[in-house]
Image (cartoon, rainbow, N blue to C red; front, side, top):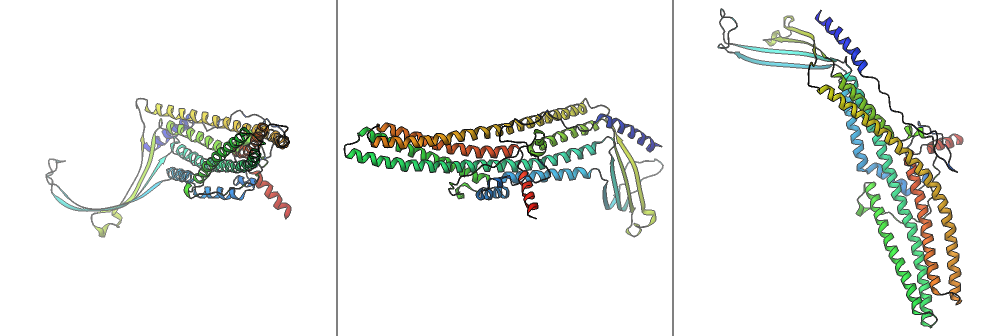
Amino acid sequence: MILRRIVVLSCAGLLLACAANPPYQPAAPELPVSWKLDAPWREGQPQDRLPKGAWWQAFDDAALAALEQQAIAGSPTLALAQARLLQARAVLAASSASALPQIGLSARGASQKISANRPLTNYNAPNFSTVQEDLSLALTVGYELDLAGRVQQTIAGASASAQQAAADLENTRLVLSADLAANYFNLREIDAELDVVERSIALQRRSLELVTARYDLGAASGIELAQQQTLLESTLVQLELLRRQRGQFEHALAALSGAAAPNFNLPVDRREHLPPAVPLGLPSDLLQRRPDIAAAERAMAAANAQIGVANAAFYPSILLGSALGLESRDLTTLFDAPSLLWSIGLSAAQTLYDGGRIRANVDFASAGYAAATANYRRVVLLAMQEVEDGITGLVTLERAALQARTAMAAARKTFEMTQARYEGGASPYLDVVMAQQALLTSERQTVQLHGQQLVTSVFLIKALGGDWQRAQATASKQAGAD
């Protein structure tokens, strides 16, 4: 009868607990229908079942691909995220075990003497001092009746945390690969810029030789010679500054790839690298593409589960315990039928007054959920900002690069005309110096804009959560070949 009453009360507590802990509903941020696209951009057709991995292969650069693989294999940052994922999965396994019965085996062997001077339990029966042996072997089973949902909510929270750790690992891999690619293309832009400056130095030295020869013949003034020498020295200073910047990018690549900077060296490569065409999707696709958004949503689910755990403290905690064993004072009779012992029962505990501690824990968990929701909205808004910045940035840079190439051609033509006019005595040498400076500036600007296009393409791919449409294109090509 007592057990029956306990079960009835527990079922009533279960109904109240279910009403007090509503199911998790992820927040749905307001997403625009489409991006602000400008030609030649178009909306893509993403499929999240396709892999999102080696997006850097779209740049068709073997050196970059080798560095990316080295970073994935040797980066301590990635190893740290992997270790955190393993910890989260271990916590999930431990939490899941709480939903199963706990089975134990105990054994005891003791020899004890009872005092003859111990307190009497009956004044008509004196105490005697005895020595007894006590041997016992028992199998115990304990199980928590999760009527208030505490165990299930704990498991749900641990599962969401493990999924969050997995998304964090993917986000760490994406950020690492994007940072490495950005530093790589910055270094390649410096290589191209060094080539421009070195060619300008060779041109300026030839001009200095020409002015020196004319000065020796009395056809040029000392001012003209000093102007050319000043221009050459100034360009040499720019060359040293560029070499310093290249060294910094090289050191950054070493750290990102898990190598020691003193032992890392990346040869100069002055080939022209072309940015790939990045497919775009609808803003809602970010919820499937970006691992940081997935991590923020899983953090929100884990925070919601903590509310359920805190709410469960308002309801009784009911434990089912049982034991089956053997006990005897002699080893020879331990396994006889009279040595058998067993027990089964329920224990329930209910807090009547705690000074508001449980309510405070619920309020704390609710505030944590509100914070996780706000962070989720922040991450989504930031993701949309990054994509829009990438789209508009690439469109603007493409237009600027076209104008820069036109300006560079005009500057080269101006220099050639000015040089010819000076040699014919129709222009002062200051015009030649200014034309050389303008040509060097326009050539460096063209190279810098091209480097910015590559880096912006990297950050746009990162903002989109990686490029999985290359895998789709590869699959289509293979299907066509078959």
